[in-house]
Image 1 (tube, rainbow, N blue to C red):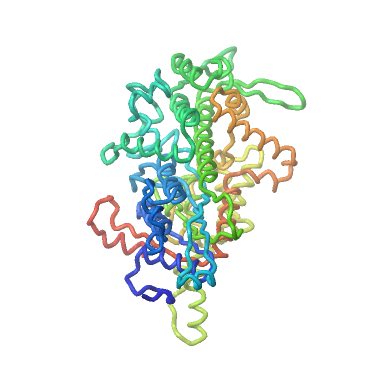
Image 2 (cartoon, helix red, strand yellow):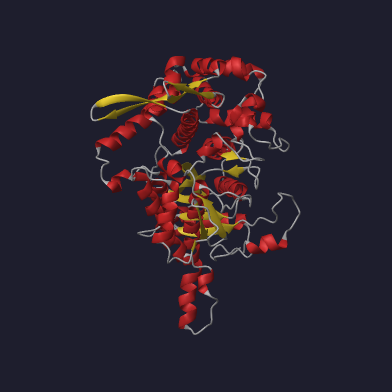
Length: 574
């Protein structure tokens, strides 16, 4: 049936791509990567699940597969396979959300390496197997750029992460054990972070999804006290959203105080920190200058921003904790041969264009530009040289070549450099960043400079479409800093998960300061754009060393309706 050929002789299909990757590893011995691309809502996450399920269970189709393994209670006949596949349930609950374009949008990037024990070819031949066996030994997952801002604010018609709605649909018996005072009988209207959206609830069965999530968490050892620590951390986030601040003027100085006393009392009980310590950390900043410590009182808007920053950081720390636990449970403990072959799957955010595009959209579209560049190199440049040598006319290569966009984004004086420079400059601002970008990169035909742009707006002609960006809060989101007062407050929490995770964060920040962050290059090391660019570079290096295959998901319409084809929209993606 054509195992030795590049194609299996059937129409292009995700099962064909998965099978070819498996055969490439088994017969060729070379690591494989499958890149799944497409715009938001095109079906990347579902496609990845189909491919993972196929690769994880394909060995069971062999006639010599042990009957004892087939009859295991585990759905897929193997504890290892079960753990690897159940990770998807946890990632969807904590990392996916409803957006205007997709009811189950991945709000983070995920690179999963499936690790296989590959049988030696000579041993397989001795046992009469033309294709060596590849037994799934485990997996490792690397995540990218979780959209933390979604925790505290969403656009109209969207929702925050699924897990919050699942928590509200949990049985009352469990709610009592988690947080009786605030969860029993509660709805989205009782929490400010959940009540700001007008998204419809139809199409979601949060109660059933809750059962699946709890079951999946237990697979990775998150049960008992560990489970309650995670869920109470989510409750702390929700309660932070219920704090309200009111302005005060004392001796002519603008200050703020927490006006929601009952909400503060509930938060204090949940997080295990005295009310006075919470209010001080929220409304004041302790500064050290030339060996002298002094206190600055915050305005109500500044206090609200700090409160939101703490909520976002708690969620990010919970997410990282889950990723570590999943990897500890799914990574193989040892191999007789000391080597694992890998088939890697990349599920990364699709190209995004909204009415208002912010820092997150810039990072997402930057990642898509990097993948587009890889795709162009793999599929077109080699063919272009070959055709030109043979005198064959080729289409205008500039239509798909995005190297000039990459120069604008990550060149020596490109957007990333300009943004990082503005972040480490004293009193750097969003409008100043946009002004310098338009001056320094004025010769780039990919940078859109419109006279009607506001001082904080700029545009980029991406490979997929021209996008206008709103640079307000670019500096803040790239810095991604939590105030030291709030960091210390979280380190005092009675919740073990929050206390340990924030202590880990505090230690890493101290380590960075002790290595001398005075130098500008070192000062930009912990910025979001720098870390994300470094992650992408590392990711592309892994991909370069493997045989790359592509699955392109095409979204047939903009209204998320089955059996409906919008021809213009579909063709635009090709």
